[in-house]
Picture 1 (cartoon, rainbow, N blue to C red):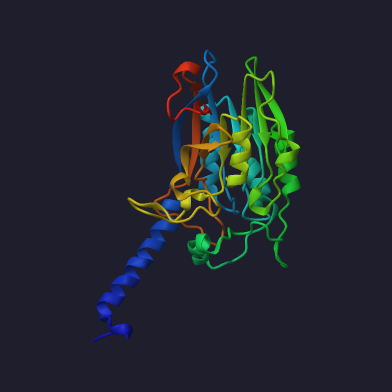
Picture 2 (picture 1 turned 135 degrees about the horizontal axis):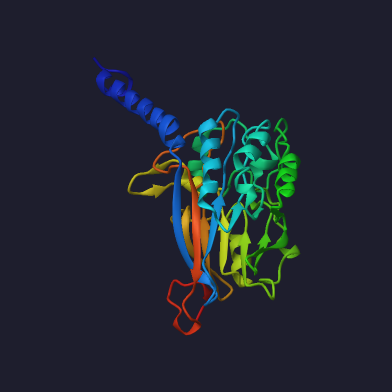
Length: 326
């Protein structure tokens, strides 16, 4: 007996069962299989002691996600030198108290943050297949679009106030600095390019003079932001937003990035070139997902502990080391 389109019923049933099993795995196991990834970046000035930076991104907190909250609280045991939060903490307008509670132990450490579009606006139910065609359309989610009628405005001000009260630096289109054991670490941050809130002209001019080290922070790694940071001479840029592709193909990788960054750099450490300079770029795959698409496949949720170490001396720059192009 055959089903529609000439497929045997057993084959149709098998495809259906495989799809159901994949969905159960993606939503029930992998999306809750939290990982800590460790990366070493040779980017500090010679002679500077290594720095341990914990990057947290794309939490997308929804009420009741107890395992995620416990895991985030446990990360304080890593005792980083400082924490960088690259945005999209929320996927629920009621999620602010749970985000602040989950990050509470980490807020005992110095830190800085930028927001993503989901901190400002609640997600809407959309067809996830549309992201598979984003490159052909030349469109990337909300980029450049005003929020539609009916979109929930998240209480981002409460989130901001909680981070600020803990002493974390708000890097929304501005600069800031932290003192770490006598060293000055300077930051330049942008609001989210995904909804065109980035204003690089306000912070242009390159790394802060007198700082021991400077880095750029942004939520979505759009090329215009990466080009600006790199051309201005920032040796390291941290970003999130991509979810690492979220639904990846084993042994192939991500299909989309939800921005204009290429899929080869959808997550992890890479380099970026612009204006005669080369920067290191680290894109976090994040530890959550939109509440309407709470699945991950071949891309488990993660937080990254970056160990920044001294770069090679200026007369021995390797082809992949960050710095001025020779």
